[in-house]
Image 1 (cartoon, rainbow, N blue to C red):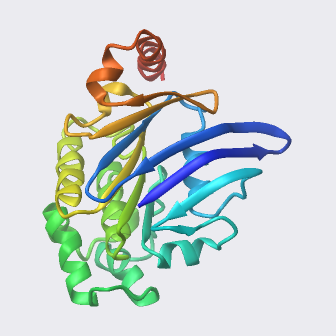
Image 2: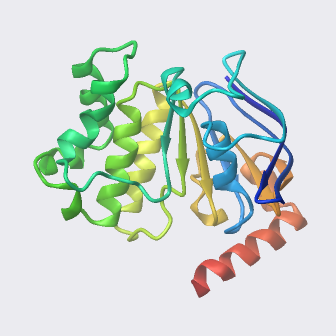
Length: 241
């Protein structure tokens, strides 16, 4: 479904990504793990067309995404929920979630797409008329993911979906991700903490200083000394921050 090969990205003259390769297949949950500044968000923003790579290939369903505009990539079936959530404060929860159905055609009709978003996050039902500026961080995160899901994607990119959230809300986010995966969607998430990787993840990539230093299953990652050192540094950073 998604194939990234030898991706190189520079930002303001500095090399941020160095020959990054990864893939995500339909029905898989794939996790990209690395400390803050490792390059995770740059990978996502490059896939979505917000940054142009120096070199490398990004293919989705056997079609190249390189050089396409973000709205074109979204229309091809990739949804993106950024780390900052970016919920529109002047819109209600219902309007935020419905927004992609106003602007983007999909294989399912508007009613089906909105119903699916609430099925994945049923807790949002009671906040339908609440304004975006009145939501907690966890509620904004759920709205952001639900809105991306309402775009009718076949692949979802979720940047730090549980970072900084109350432990009370994290299970709702994880359950939502599990539900999305069970429906056959591919899900690629970025996390800065190994302990935030869901136990049902199929594969993970560990990135350090713009390079993928490990690719394999979560169980294999936990046995890898290099990954353990990076994870330990990540945990310490998370605790300090």
